[in-house]
Image (cartoon, rainbow, N blue to C red; front, side):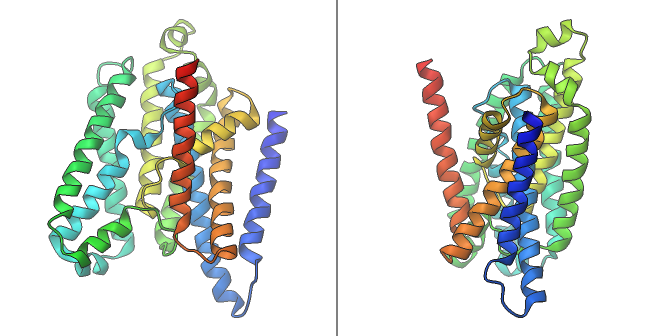
Length: 314
């Protein structure tokens, strides 16, 4: 049953993608199809990466209310953009080749995440809560630093930073997109191979160790995969904090299974479908280019509040 629903989800994504590409298609067909294809690929890549990363993160944290953004990835990204503009100016940022900037941003985020996980989990992976709380504190600190630097910028330079604070799918570099898909494919393949171990790890550290699983190694490997997925998706289009929570929650409701071999692809597919369908509605029907990220964050935030309040009542 779960596999059948996964197939239906894939068909839904295919139909929505076809509608996104073909709706009101006019000449010049080749040029328009190329632009739409790049944007579609970016939507699918970011949605799939965010959904899969959130399921992995929730598994090792043993908490379905959390997303990788809670650790401060988005705050670090915004701080880096702010410092870059403050150092070389908006015109200097515009002259940096897109692939170079993407590589630097993704590498910086991955190194920071690996450093955080390595320092806090160097002894064992028992205290994931301590790592999450540390990430929350660091996120608040980084946001404060970014806001302090932003107050020193000229209005024109602040506009450049402001554009990086929200996810944008309007101008995605094909080279960056190709690198992101390579990382996404590698991580999804690795997570599929690790799916049985992740199923056992979700039972808790004590139970998993009792069943013979090297729980600490699985947790560290999963965290590194989360870091890779979040880093490339954030560097590609910008931060999307609550999309993963929407995708993971809907995936658990749809497939109704704890098997990660089904749950991770389902979350990836739902994340991609949400972005493609949302962009189709706002761009094709409402002629709006920038509303998608705001709306996704709004409904994701509402879902987060609903889950928190529902758990509090329970």
